[in-house]
Image 1: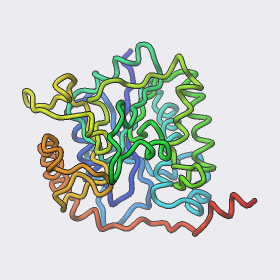
Image 2: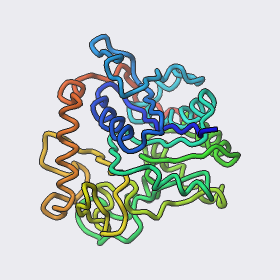
Image 3: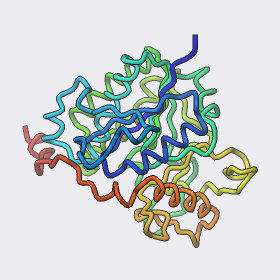
Length: 310
């Protein structure tokens, strides 16, 4: 019997171009995977979802959770991340999946997921850290204290294989995210991500931190990773194939790596080729149209402070 393997993302209407790029890269490099997108938004009459054939859409309100409560208390980033565990559970149950990878919509694959799947032979929970090595302290971001506030692991990626440890992780993580998935590091909350610091402790035998620096390369770890072109693909530090790159906070209209981090195309010119590829694919996927769609919901202000006072 063939394994049911799924990759999925969560996004709003204004991120559909990024999601289309992700979906096409999965089709190219992981054709044995089914790809789903949970739309954390209302369907918009101006978008023909059926014409976006590379994506299987699931409306987030199909999840067996209190959607009205989440709309009331979460902003757009909080809601998109808070439902992630619920999406995993839905996919495991509905499709009897054995392996599921979550990827943020602003990620693109550059080589096969087989490089990752081999790790499921001795683990059922796969995590990628933001960094492996110290960062020279300096002006701007990132410095190491960033990850003390936001989490050691980047939850733009999470891989799970069906197991009792994965089930327990999802039950616990879902409860925390749906109740307290706020973006407020001052109070010790950073959406779905900060909670995951506990998982290598809770499930020591079943959790694996991926050592492959070709996984989840992004603008926060460019101090320790360089790219070189290799036979039509890319290698990281001349060692590992680039499996996927995380184009976090990238604006296709600007000649910049990120609006949040200190690295630039002048300090890190080796990454420019992947950004050129991504920029073109975003434009081809319709980013100039999709970026203008507004999120359908509006969060009530100061919900977290009211909650903490109870």
